[in-house]
Length: 115
Image 1 (tube, rainbow, N blue to C red):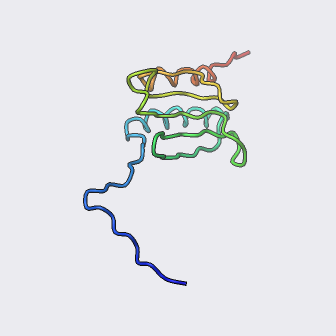
Image 2: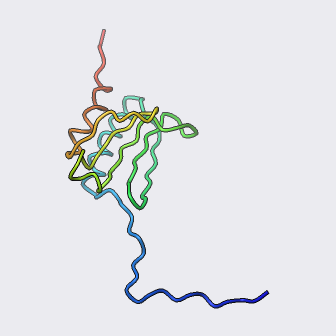
Image 3: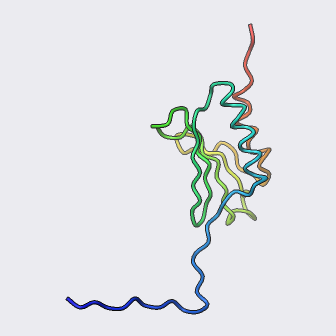
């Protein structure tokens, strides 16, 4: 068996960047998350920063599939919108350019009839 030295990277090579939520975007998402936790609807969340998409997943319980995924896809900025809310079954519930208006689809779950 022969051992080969590692191949050096080119001088101008940059590793692929990750898409992430900005602090102001996270503030809006976590504000909604806090209200939903207080209402007893959500219990846990997870954040994934991938090459093409950043995902904020919301769970009812820790060991299950997410109820909702809030996605940020910069490549769709000029088309359908940067942000999307996706349901448990993979259906896009709302898509748009403004995060607050996209998250309104989830805020409707907070409104309950009081007897």
